[in-house]
Length: 221
Ligand code: AP5
Image (cartoon, rainbow, N blue to C red; front, side):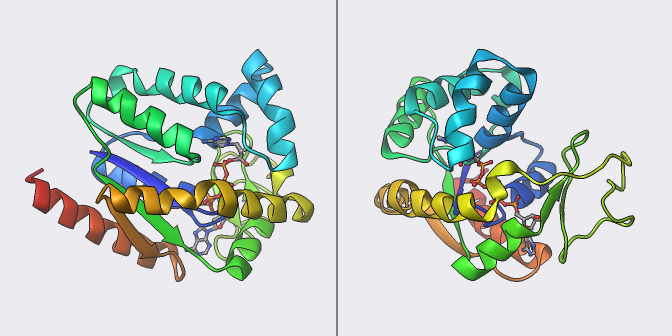
């Protein structure tokens, strides 16, 4: 199954994608995570992406499309994939469609996770991450047991530089101007489902699973 998660920064795409990945047994590909590991490794891709990410802008399409396509070609994606943060522009959506056409496949469902701006800001401001295992915490909704330290690794948690209040607002603007139009694109393709992203992680997960189960039942998968 090929699933796309759409949603503004902080909508809960990463959190929900991890749970869906475990449930469905298919990998979760986050374009943001791919960029962050490229930055950490000091690669040329990372150096190129860093300036855009820190400013809350999108990394240019040609760089992003090549990076995600490389990952999609790996054998572990043969059974399906959950895409989180890609596509994010019309060009990326068209490139994904063209890529999948070559494999005689298509996107099965696009889950647009809807959350108010107020909640987005609260989620981004409270997010803390483990630098070693990548576990994502939230100061209020998913606090660590010992303040500032990862429950699993004991490592000191950090906040993403693009979660700083000044950049948060720009990221949401960029989402509204460049990514939100994909909602209509995928609606016209007949694969869009809009899901309320407020409430607990478990409640949102349940809503997403209901949509996916209905899509699977409809396609006989
Ligand atoms: P990316 O990493 O994709 O960031 P994003 O889309 O801005 O999304 P986030 O990771 O901030 O949020 P999320 O929706 O995953 O929320 P999460 O589950 O963590 O991209 C970063 C940058 O990379 C972009 O700005 C751009 O520069 C570049 N980039 C990436 N992809 C690109 C592309 N395709 N093209 C060009 N550039 C690209 O949740 C947030 C917090 O809320 C967590 O603390 C979590 O614990 C908490 N939380 C989640 N759900 C709930 C809930 N239901 N209740 C309470 N708390 C919750």
